[in-house]
Length: 401
Image (cartoon, rainbow, N blue to C red; front, side):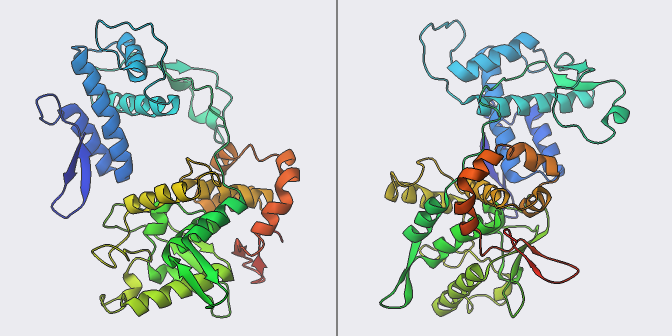
């Protein structure tokens, strides 16, 4: 997989063969994804999968347009073991990739073959079969009318026994420890000590459930501070120099007074450092910017955030899960709202899910038993959050109202 920097400064990925030339079938499909305005991270993930597939084809001397179902099955074994042709290891050893990762890689390869099949290339004809009965999963309204001939299902599939496991979450106390490790209130000086920017990021992710890319794409004009009314932020799809984007499109999210005040503290510190003087339009600059490294006040990179995560993991070893990521904040946010009694359709809109069923499928583990065990803790944690405002009365709608 090769990273490419385009003339406008944006970047993308492609797949190179053993001869270091672009693999044309893979590049044609990746270009199709770009034309469909797929996320750069999606293109990167698909390119990684196709690079593995062509590595497998080269290693086993196979033609990409002459593969069989048996070859796809062997690809799964190769992903797990990495054994080259002629090697049949009997040693028990851990898989190279998690089953969930293998499933994603296989889906990308199958999607590439579907694309070429629809464009008239004689490949992949036996990769799907038509099934008349459903698998028991959710189907949209009038599904029986729209699909007279049944549903296409992949013949080659990965069966992950861990599918359905609840998404990982952080407890309110663990989130607070992460925030405190970034910045804390000093009672003696009556000031915040530490990195206010870093703490603001975790507070924002935990209270709004936005994705990391959506938070990094946030501009000052998107933050509407409270002036006697309810403060809110806007998640707006727009181009970003580091290719982060608002995956779910536009939405408005109400925030607490505490978060709004802390944002004001951060803006005051930015202006004190001169951030408002280096830009002609401060409102159009990103909220989260470089403060410690050059170029100063440039948009913060996702890679830098993950460097911060690695440092916090070390500092808080034994106090927070060792594998937590920024996305855990999103899962924690949804879990907190559901346990606090917020209707699932409100949570779905707040998360930016295209369908409420996505929310139900992802957070189906939030049961009555879990509510009985954790309700008091989560209710106290979300007490100051604002989910929305009643359009008829104008009254605040909170998670515990």
